Structure formats: structure tokens, C-alpha cells
Image (cartoon, rainbow, N blue to C red; front, top):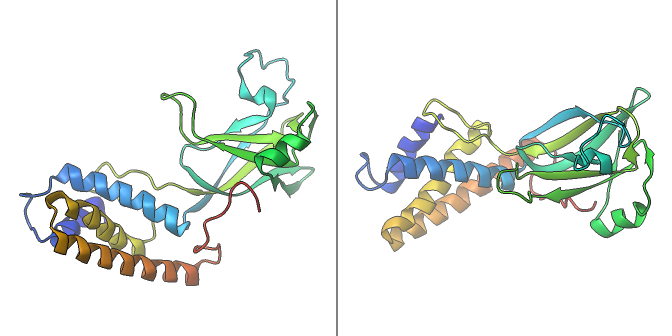
Length: 229
């Protein structure tokens, strides 16, 4: 379903066929939020991005604040949860070992260059005008140009037009409607409607998780611990 069709479904769930109680903008916002929550719970939007590293001591890195000088690289803006990190060296993909903060710091006590072996993640940004995904810390610091592949679960793109369709599997689109209706039902404090929407959402989410788990063997039920394996 595209956004327009989902919004119509939400109105049906809420018991109205015209926009007399819920604004289009309210439903649109709720649907985008619900898609993000479903993506977080289902962990089914797996993708990858590749970038080229730069030697940490490359003289062309003249900016003292360039994070690549300390073996760091930004996470993709649509990052949600890491699956693994790989580096190409000698025609072979090497999977990096994911470490917790204390383990990573224990190994990264000295500046050392080479092919990265370990990584850790840092989420969020330190400035309001910066992407919120976070940083990927590598050790040893890359000492040459390597192809770095980040395999991760992505956030769905926010729908801005009624013709837009969420990247979530189609089987989850109705679930987003149930969740949006559950959130919006609190607007008028109708307790009966709220309880009905909660029950519908919980039942629908269970069905979607079951479908994803059967179709996709990437641990849809388990939220990955991105700080350690």
C-alpha cells in the first residue's frame, strides 16, 4: 500500500471516512513513525554500503578534525542495526570482529596502522546539524585504501508523497496502519477504541514476525547486540 492507501486504512480503523477528527498530517506522521518501529522490531531491511578507506597518516588529510585520522568512519544515514563489517584485502573479504567499548580500548591503546581487524560502534551525533547515525571505529587504523563494506539493517525512508510506498515488506504495511491507529486513537481518549487498537496491533505484529521468521533466516526475532557477539 502507498501512503494514501495506508491513510485511508487508518481512517477506517479509527471509525471515520472523512478527515473530521484526524488531520492528514497527523496520520502521515504516525505512519512514518510506525514504519520505523516495525523496521526496528522486524529487522528485515538488510542492505550494505561500501566505501573506500584512506590511510590514517595520508598527508592529504590536512584537516586535524578529520575523523579518518583516528580510524573512524561515519555510519550511513539510514543505519538502524549492524549485521557485520567486512574489509577487502588481497581479493578476500575479511569479517571484522565486533568489540565492546572496553575490549576495543584495551586493544587500541597505541596508534597502529594496518588492515582493520576490530570495530566498535558509536551511535548518535554531537551536533544538531549532523547526521544522527554515528561512527564506526576501526583498529588497526587503515594504512591504505581498502574497500570497507558495512552490512546493516536500514531505516525505512520517510514517505513524503501519497504515491510513496514504504520499503518494508508488503505484508507489514497493514501492521503499520494498526500501529498508527493505535497511537492516534489516544487523541480523543476513547478507552474502548484504544484497547481495541492495542489488541489489533499486538496480534498483527505477532503474525508479521512469524511470517518474516519463516521467510528470512536472519534472526528476525532477535534484536542484535551491536556491542558484542
